[in-house]
Length: 225
Length: 225
Image (cartoon, rainbow over all chains, first blue to last red):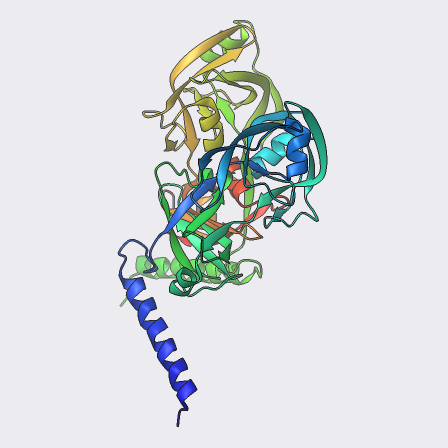
């Protein structure tokens, strides 16, 4: 016989399962039955600390927003820097995203990494133990950052409620797919949850270009890994 | 009752099926049970006619082999050209592959296409009806080729016997996979058979970089599409 608490848990489980089934059948687009996930293609970009920002742009520079990004609070700034690696070739005008953070990080594609001559790890944002070195050049100075460059892990931003709808939770990995003449399935997409986030998957430009993405705005959810 | 011809056909079918089963079980690497396929990553490259070669390198130039490629008879030549698209930016030193052909073709990745400012189709080699325009510049001249640039379709070179081992035939499409922290599955890989070819799949640099390929020399065969 079930106790009251067990009854409540059972009700919760049934409600969750019903929501999940309703959610799965509400979309006719994905072969897995789940709703497609909005896609954001991340071009190379930079996060800086306030100290590094001032080294590159001068002590009196103000960090200015150019336009908001899709995730609440995130924005593209008015500022770009040039980046040089050990091959001494530069990628000019990599945009700094805001707000400023407590670490310096340059997120590049593998194509960029080969061009620059670095071998960055595939890593989650903020995990810089194995990150590769680059020199950043701004209008008022330059810095050599010994551990700054990563290839960002594929990841998806979700609320906890979205995650439950996909049968996922924070820290899980999932698989997604883009169709077309270069149809591609992407594994090891890290699930990150925060109830202020909008549902969006981030793939880098190599991932997007491999699938010849032109007008796709969504990916198909294949399943949990 | 079976006629003699039907008996022979039956023997052939049984032999083929036994070979197929033996082949499938001889490899412990691929999750599909099939042997992995050797991988060749195709960087941007050019095929030219003799006439275009002479326009770019002069009427007396000789087309010289630098080193053989993996497929018998194919080679990297000693010659490179610079390529410019409508954004007026150039990619210097794209290598011409030999032998010379009866059409001019520039095979680029989508990353290259975005850099150059063109929108080439994903197409099979030699299918240039929808190809994009580029200017090619050599040491003795330049040419504007109105239909030359494509993103080469994913394809795999096989003998007919290899194809049979994978349960495939010329013109089929298959799916392959590369594992790792950016594990990726590639669809719509065109099967091309010729009994002089060595077994090899060709993916472009965007495909390879999406999967963060560093030391992989083979892909896993997932199955026929």
